[in-house]
Length: 137
Length: 137
DNA sequence: TGTCCGATTGTACGATAGTCTTATTGTCTC
DNA sequence: GAGACAATAAGACTATCGTACAATCGGACA
Picture (spheres, each protein chain N blue to C red):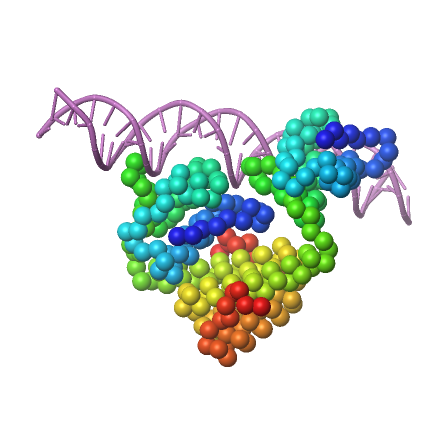
């Protein structure tokens, strides 16, 4: 479970964490019953205060996505329904696109440039059946 | 690192500050990683409102000279040449799009769905002049 | 078997940092 | 003067951190 935080993006740390955890669940990387790192452990990994982690966990707990238990740890919950997981999946896509747009914007690109970059990648995706590796030049 | 402002010059305080910080960096008086005074601390030193300091910090942040982090402080960043930053900028857009495509793929979405989600966000971006917040529904 | 105690886990709350929105002040233009 | 605009200020707000605290677990030991 490798989360990572970007301090330069001005997106709050706890939001970045929430997104990444939701995402990991949506992709099956985290499954129901799995234990998340403890607030202190994850805080140490990310060089961040543990209360910031606790805040993210708390919000996910409020959403019924994880269960945090005093003195025990925090765990991934069962998704309540197929319908909800479908919704989560779509929310993930929505978050993903908006994250993409927001980052491009922050980097000073306009809609047209983002559009161009995207369609180019899309072309590769359609011809190859899968998107290009992120490392490739 | 003793900044001082001259109220008689009619040069805006935040401009004077920006110049002095840039100068301090140029002379090596401030080095990458160094923490600047907090907006309130510096405001108290200079007998000025903290928002004026915040404004100067914000502009330096936009220029990629410093990194201001909510709740943490503001720090000097590594300098990058204009040419290098332009290259980095394009590479990051490329990485961004591929990351987007790769993640959408992992979530089980096809090119068409990714395309649809993207164009929808793009539409908002173009009408509003900036992309939608990532949290909004 | 029961209890104690240290280690580990999450929680509460106040302090400190930057941000946002709105108001005030000064200056420029007509 | 009136209106427009930029610079500054004021105060409420949000994010992060630090310290102190409470719940749970697990081993030691009587």
